[in-house]
Amino acid sequence: MLAAFVIGRAQLAPQTLDRNGIGLSFAIDARSYRIEAEDMARLIRQARARDWAAYNASFHVKLYSLSFAAAGGLVGENILAAEPLNLLYYLLMLALTYAIASEAFDQKVGLLAAGVVALWPSLLLHTTQLLRDALFIPSMLLLTLALVLIVNRNLSLKHGLVVAAAGSFGALIVWLCRGDSWELVLLTSMFGAAICGLAQVKNRRFLMGNTLAIALILALTACIPRLVPAYRQSNTLLALPIKEAEPNANAALRRENTPQSSSRWDVSRRLRLLRHRFIVLYPLAGSNLDTDVELRDTMAVVRYWPRAVLIGFFAPFPNMWFVHGAQVGLAGRLIAGAEMLLLYAVIALAGVTLVKQRRFLSVWLLWGIAAAGCIALGYVVVNISTLYRMRYAYFILIIILGMKGLLSVMPRRSERQVELLESEALE
Image (tube, rainbow, N blue to C red):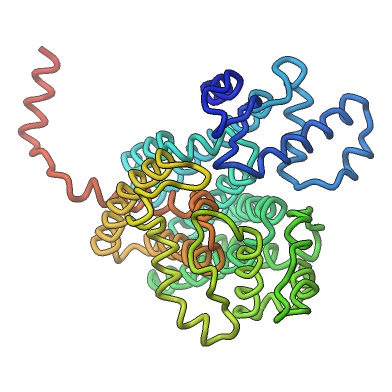
């Protein structure tokens, strides 16, 4: 964070970071978010609480305005003022990664997975910015942890209520900061319920605490959009021009963003509108894929499924690694390529875990959530730069599975070797 601010303030990379440390090439939205947070911080200092509450901004920006109000007077209205909140998000991200991995496997996997996430270069860079991803990731991980606990443990009624409260809180924050991902929250909760039921059938035991926890999470995730008002996601998305072939698409898109809309359950229509929005939003981006593909009906969704899997898991593809990027240049593409090469290995190791640990339902729970998220993004996000950061939460789950696979393929030392090493250390 400090390095990003210093580089930006000194204008050592003027095409990458501005004087406030805001990313120009990889976090364009953060520039407008910073201005909004600065305006709301001024309202807080002037004790204009009603004006702050009525300010038309996204939920995560309102939280950043609190950090700006507290620290902006000392360090200025820049990424340093956002650091208290970003540091909290980052630590929560690591703690939840460790907790999920430890619960699904053991502490060794937890430490290894948390270490990999902590040193993930692009994720580390994005967590210095004023983006909603920093809040979305720990929220989604909290919901995932609750589901893993429900599947793995025999919960009492009291503990079941605590776990349900934690999982529902994670779902609530996802709704507030990224309402467009709500179908994935519902799908994740339903998949968790199915795995929980399967676990009880497998063990031939009915667990009241576990059943209560998953029932509460399902009920609350279904009710949250109807009970909690949606914060503005982006006015620009709804003001974008729609193709003449779809004159009513703009109005349909507005209806799609209301929780009462029954069309949310029309999967093909929902995917079509979300995908079209991304196509219109990034018309000139240098890392677009398949912008000529529109998902006009259910058969188009089915036919595009293999391509969505490839994009969701493996983009950017190798042929994009060595091409000069319109926003990030050649260096940015090379860094992304190096990360993807390592992530390919992690995906392969996750496959090893799926084979070796196939009898553990928590393994399939983690893989199912990760796969659903990645494939859904592969369907709707045509800009690879945006896709890259939107799937961090799901790739963290794959990293957890991959670290278990890595440990399982590493040669183990014999007990005699361990004893010799211990005796040498004592000497």
